[in-house]
Image (cartoon, rainbow, N blue to C red; front, side, top):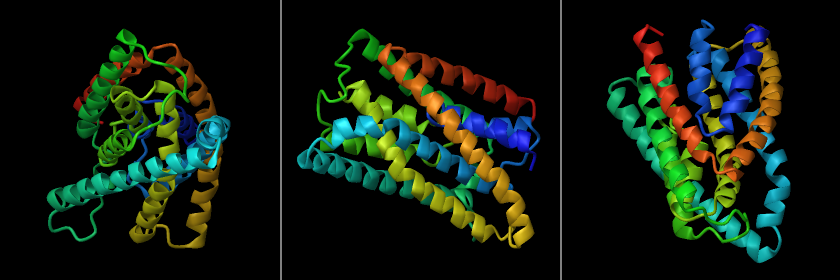
Length: 289
């Protein structure tokens, strides 16, 4: 695995994972443009490590804000834990049912099929980017017309709001291009959660979700049985660790940018970007990528 390619992918992942533009879509396109195979097992291991790097970036960046917002007192923490668990359960239910249904429908008769086999399909990524971009655009334009409070502690997230955000997060799982952060923050904004609180809650959900994603990808890697001896594994691990470090650093930069754009009322511009990106991905698919 080329170290320069790993660094490029780590920067793409780190920036895009924490911006509402779908990291997976950007990484897959970057891999294809670099002549790499997104379905190769070493790329699966790299993806796991990139997610790990960005998860730590989220924890480092948001820790002080989470302490002020959610950990001021035992009752505050209990309310936060309840809505976080509720949203995560609904994510698991909605995402699990969708993934199981798609695998059964699309891969009927294939005993060891995974939905990840569809993740390099640019013809599927383009409409997912467009759908996510539309949701972000609607939320951003609505917020721009009727700006609410920017105080992250201004209101509590209700069980109904948390359930909606969690269900929307579940919809993102099977579809590369449908940004998790974009969809969850936008859903929160549309159901009345202040935008800074939506951001805090969305990335808290990411910390809960990421270990499950890492576990799934690791199990998939083991089942594929392609990396099965020490030398090959060792040659894949070192670039992946480097990728995690680079993704961590890029993720911190992306979070600073995201927060500024949220505070400046420019959320809708991410939606415009996703729509343009959908057109670009469709063009790449047309030209045979």
